Amino acid sequence: MASSQKQFSMLFLAYLLLIFPQQMSCLASSRSSSLVALTDASNYTVNEEVEALLTWKSKLDSESRYNLSSWNGTSPCSWRGIDCDPLGSVVSLNLSFSAIRGTLHSLNFSHLPNLVTLSLPYNNLFGNIPLSIGHLSKLIRLELFQNNLSGNIPIELGSLRSLQYLDLSDNNLTGPIPIEIFGLSKLTLLRFQNNKLSGSIPKEIGMLPVQYLDLSDNNLTGPIPIEIFGLSKLTLLRFQNNKLSGSIPKEIGMLPVQHLALSGNDLTGPIPDEIVSLSNLTYLFLAANNLSGFIPKEIGRLKSLHTLHIHENSIAGPIPSSIGNMSSLGSYCFLKINLSDPFQKK
Image (cartoon, rainbow, N blue to C red):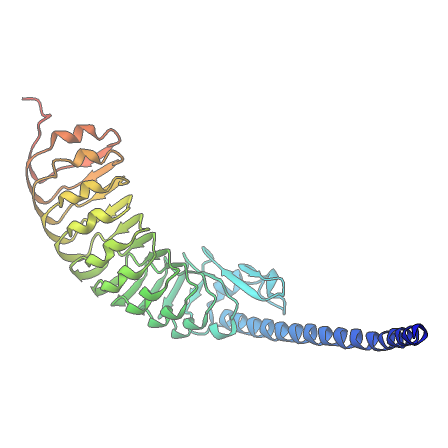
């Protein structure tokens, strides 16, 4: 019996020695095939990226092409403004202050599938923002400010579900703010100021998780949507120099903002008493509206406030004595409002 068991063990060991090298060979072959496939896919992507970037360069003006003289050959990772991932695929295109003149229409965004950053501010880009920008599914940062872009903001930006920073300020963009943008659940910064945007501010704006929201210097109309005061992470809100109307909602006291700018609109009614709940507020701009009533008596509770501008309104009555408690106040303006100053020498 012992002899039979020993003989069986020897046969089983021989079987393992026979089959194990074959299995290892199959495993090595499988791994090798996967690596080859991955390398081939990466090379294909890089080739498409090179083609897309060189085609765009060829459509720019001569000075732009000169500034991009490093853009030649088949290895974009060494080109000006380009960063790559470990496989050599383009993940960042950053050409700020590069004197680039031309449009974005010849830049094939579908051939840049791994792009995380597209930063082209302080250039001379003109024309519309192409609808194909919606192909950049991995994009986290989109910065096109300080150019001459025109036309509407494409609704396709709402497809960029990874986007965290969106800055299209200081251009000539027109039309309404697309509702689709407010579905971007990772967006922390939204800056559209100094364009020619029109229409009302959609109530869907209250869906954003933004910390910085700047829609100033446009042609936006209608009331301030109450939904915006549910933005629990908001630290900067700038709506000044539009054509917003109606009153300042009392829900404003819910905001955690440090910077609040509503100057240069057509806002009416009183400054809501709830504004004194903004304990983090350092900058408050309400000037050049049609506000009436009185300055809230407890405004002195805003002890972090550094700047207070409420001039050019129809506010009446005395300056509250509590303002003397605002030890951080360094800049204030009450010009062109009907106030009596309790601190004025008689």
